[in-house]
Image 1 (cartoon, rainbow, N blue to C red):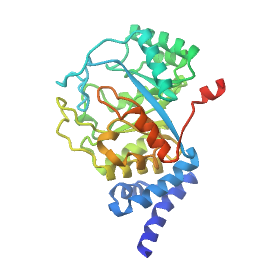
Image 2 (tube, one colour):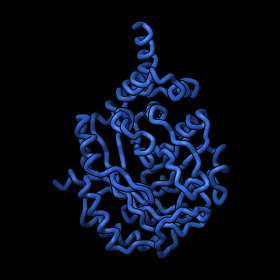
Image 3 (cartoon, rainbow, N blue to C red):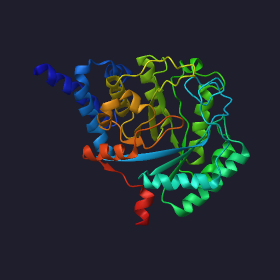
Image 4 (cartoon, helix red, strand yellow):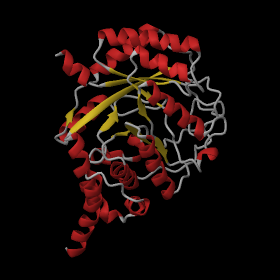
Length: 338
């Protein structure tokens, strides 16, 4: 009994520091993901203390549309759309405006507050940017959705055009640690991704950047990722767990087990306490039946399918949130229109 009390006090101390604005040290952070599994519930309870302070029991829903599939010249080892992948994925150029609008309507039906338009490739052409902006203009006029774009590396003027059109958020994941980056892709650099995120911030969009866990990184590197995103001041942090797709260079990578995945989410909550922590791609594969527990650390999920992999049924996500006694967070734009 005394040992259990000490465990709880240890993790609550981290929660207390997070709540009072103190930066926990990397030395304090690493034990979160290396803790014995018997510590899991106290860790999640401490993470929930922080999560509930900033977000109560609300859960943000996000939906993505694969607006351009395949045809990518990059060699990212995790991606089925890359030039080095032999995975059988659909390939098509950027979807037309009507299809993007239909996706936005579907996001509304799924109770998502944020709709993210994602396109494969190193970065958008001017024609693609024009198409996205045309759809964004119409969505903003007709639907109370926050809009996110994920189009690859951006030039300064491209970032400004998206911001001026009313794109609220731009996603560009760091994916892995700086030191592990070259083992994942060599057709662009970690620094280029950081530059795009800086341009996003300078243009006035909210930066969204996250990671993919399970790509050969060490525990210390996972902690480095969390601190890198803290330093970048990313407002939204999607935490993906590698879904090893046959035909990709990382097809033989092992699954991140559920108990470790939960500790990783708690780590990100302690390091980035006030930020939107989203359980993203691969949650169904890694967390399996323990998905509900993840929402004690995270406060956001994707609903529906991902880019080239299937997600959980939307009704199951809604039911999971309801069964926890949590509530789907209404989009602030939607509230303003009531």
